[in-house]
Length: 296
Image 1 (cartoon, rainbow, N blue to C red):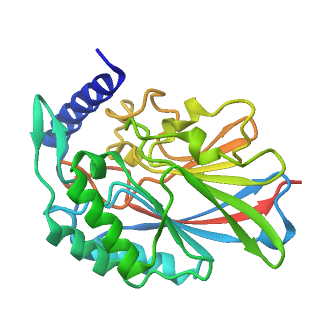
Image 2: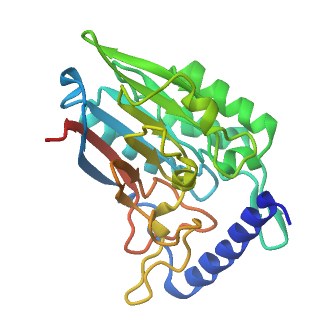
Image 3: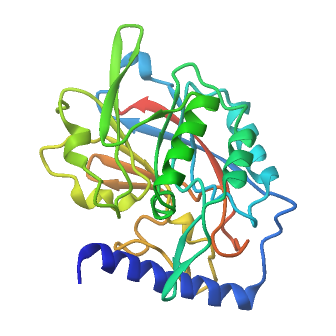
């Protein structure tokens, strides 16, 4: 069995657990939205002085579908813009589309759900730009969906896509690097291509839908911060049991929040939307503002 088949099998079993857990505990009230603004300060070694206090908005896992209310997306965008971040990042799974569940796929890409999401995010603006990567559900929904997502966000929001590549962000004569990869479960994911031309002399921040990309980071690579989603914070957090389903080979490690691996840090947002059913228990949707500071 190849690695891709193994990953998809893991996801199917995880979705069975999420669906079963949801049957017994009820549904999240989608009319109240309940998006939480999470503000986090992250300290980075050798951060250029001009980037001290630099703010990044982070949104992920909208999963636009019949069960994801546009008011949820608009509230998440409003919370981000209330802090006027200097840069905005989007880390994938914009749609649910085709979902690998049980022995087959369910659902399909619908343009109207994507259009509603893009319209809901129309207020997003940042002086240093909006940057994005794609998630597993985006890829699973096929080439047409990928093209529509890329074109829609680029035309209406001015999004720059980071598909296994990097770019330099300059501020008053100083710079950091931003890189991004395709979803970790896809064969097209290439951290080596994304890192090409980078080294230990600069601060490097990476966008990756799936935080499991940490497993591919080599000792000779300097990646100071990874911004991710994918795990939804478990979506359901139960007393004693914890989170029944975490789609990560690292179990609970990258479920949500800030995780440190030596000097490399990963921030995993709980995401905005929900998958399979509108269920979120002790795990509210999240819009994130990250402030960079230089480590002492």
